[in-house]
Length: 199
Length: 176
Image (cartoon, rainbow over all chains, first blue to last red; front, side, top):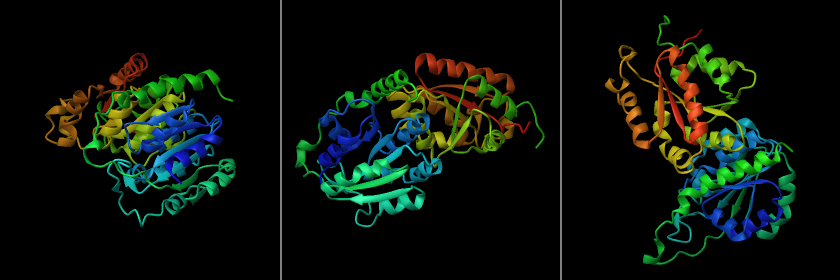
């Protein structure tokens, strides 16, 4: 499975769930044309799960799907306990595990890539359920049942990283949009949620 | 500890939060605000407690709540604010999500109460206001109970300007 397949499978069944993505998943959902309700933690590694938790607490009538990154989660492992303490039934936490940072650029290895068991960590922290997939067909088949469960549920998605880009082509000027899009998305999502009230 | 004018009663802090419509108390606990924490831990109608493992998470949870139409307060201490500067940069500055903070001045010399905290000899105290100024985040000092009007101003500012605001609690909150 690659990140585009993983995100396509999630988007295919997301329905009206609020999508909170970050890093590579943000780009994958952009390519899929993922629409409201949606926000990205950008540029902020590690923020997606907590932004999603705030949304889940504030809007218990709406399912929240967080699509995190493995290096992002490593930055905020204590966030698993923050989520677990609240036991939000509408919270589903997916982690794209590609084992790399700056994936598709230099593909630098994440710490303890061959050692860390994220699903076990989430379960030990107090998530109701945790599982791991590396096969797209198996994930696609299991996802409806995963989303039917009460959260917090954790799902690791082991994906093959894209190949690195060699040398001087890796660094381009970061576009201004990268620094303003979260604010624009916050305004849009807030308005979208307010228009619909509590279902 | 004998109460003096610099110990703002926790009951008054709570009343100020309530009159500003605060519905979620998002926190990594602060030693300076222990009396307020204990009241919230005991349960306050209409005020949900959200415990976070670190201040990055507190900022982001508050942002999510704010987007969801809620009215959180983020309660941390000065060291915690130093720890979450990047989350603050992304959420409060770049994204302009108006998070309002109560930040306790942990480590302040008692002899400095009522004085300029920037004259403290301790980095944990004297760096707070310069860092907030460098970040362009407005702040209000809560030094005595009368300063709690600053909380009303801070929320009004956050609502009006869609900017974050920090209320600096200068001395341990009173147990009354």
